[in-house]
Length: 417
Ligand code: LLP
Image 1 (cartoon, protein in one colour):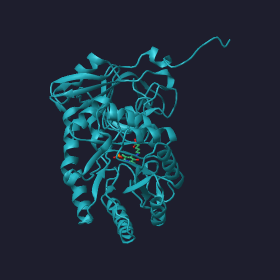
Image 2 (cartoon, rainbow, N blue to C red):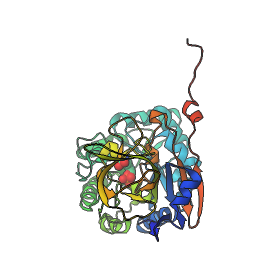
Image 3 (cartoon, rainbow, N blue to C red):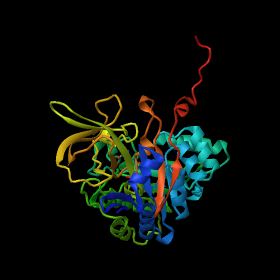
């Protein structure tokens, strides 16, 4: 659910016309709805926040400080995968004590930074990583709180690039060897084993894979308990899908009702790491059509947002609905909506049936709040787009538009010649 809809013939973000946003801030422009973000965060809190449960927002989906600060004010924790994300989370006021740190390639510097900041736990993805954390913690005279990320070998039935819980994926430790890993970890002087972590993929629209994965993890937890290893935290990961193209994914409430009863009275504190289902439909990308063009085979709408601003269609062939900011009754036709980047893969929509588009017109790319700006780049030396927050009838910048100066800011051009 979100707050982007037509009132009369004008598309609005909450109570603000997109026309007005386009005029005031220019395009391309990411626009977020505060009410939608709050609604999603509150739904998660209601579903999983009982009994000390922690909702740790996955920063990779969207790491704008204003959004993080808003979620922090609602009690969010953070799921981070780099020192940079941890830095952002802390800057935005997310408590370290609600922050978990996953990722297969943590460096010694990142580990020592996270230790210093007292994060809740490291979600460890390999044997060698565990040894490194033990070593780094030892040097710091600390014990590192750790959960092992297990790979339950479940097919999440989603896009192969965003499946993570299959045996062939690089993530986590094979669940069949997990007991062994735990026993080894217990013997490490500077490791404190406190939990287990799983995350099987993203944009999941069915409950079954979540359940199956959890059942496998619970079997492991029981085996661990029988061997005298008691865990405090169960981190269920993220992955709940959203509606891009008519999907009907369950909401956080349904997910919780299906999963939490399985835990019975094992005394575990639950952590969830949603990203997309909080931010995805809370943001859109506003873009202006620059030109239209017709060839013998195709019709193109060339817009001012490219794969550098939103890479999902180019990278995964993802579907994002694109609608006009001013509703019209033009005939529907098949077209490609493409960006200005010099790559044939630079499209926001391919062979899409939609109402004819005219140069100068504003279009909204929906479902762009997650993995939109956070995956953007300066490719073709295009400055980053601006970002705006809307709340009722108010709106304000939460990131200035990038400039040409920004493009070269970090370059060191000396007297090489
Ligand atoms: N926790 C872990 C350990 C993760 O790897 C991820 C996402 C999440 C939580 C958050 O998952 P979410 O709730 O957002 O599904 N760039 C891709 C998505 C990559 C997801 C990577 N991991 C896309 O644009 O679809």
